[in-house]
Image (tube, rainbow, N blue to C red; front, side, top):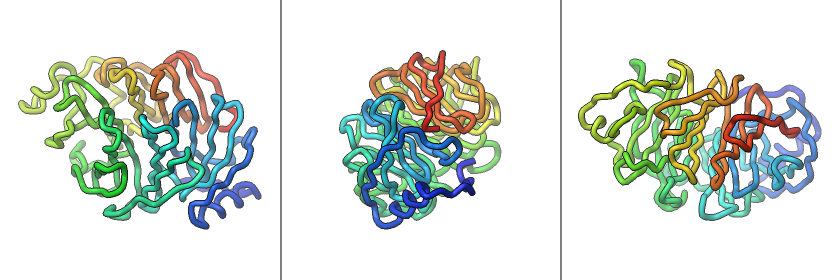
Length: 310
């Protein structure tokens, strides 16, 4: 799903991707209504109120998706994250194993890959209470972290053992919950479901009700009353910084919503969902990619509007 190549090459696509390979160049330009199906977006993020979608190219909307500006990408983007305390600071995880950082909302990029193993970056998340602490999920490797906003990186945790095998981390979200050690949990989507680890990095565990730290020590994991669909890959996670109990997930069955820290889930939008992001200050304001189309909700997923840039 994430690696399909669109055969309909156009002059605009060629110019955008050519500029991106020439070395982190700015590429401003108006994009009022991108041709449907022309681009495949593999990552979404909010930069303050702005919406950003990225893949083989990168577009930004400063008016809720009514119009778009095309920017150069640092390379094929697989993951995006924004710094909650510094509007304009973005982190991009690339297919070629690099991480790039923008300080100007995506207009230009710098490489920040020192110490990384060079495998594809599948997810990036900024710590909920420590915005200079950044996590990255690396294909075939595990969870990496940077404690200096991306200047250097080190391994934090191996991949989780689920369904009798090590599972890659497809998506990450940092969640500030009272049940975590220090209040911080790293939630991760895998090919076989949802898991999480506290920021002590002691053990991956299921998301469950009750005192999670007690369950972590005892190994007891009572089942959730309304979990995500069993066995489905969790392709994207979004945590509402302004309401730590609110989470959203993108699965092949749709966009799912949890109002209690991922213990119980309900379906917000049916369809094949691959990405979801939530506004940092408004937990009701969502963007998602469903059935290949970019969609927006301003009421927590109760209703949705299709955006022309999809």
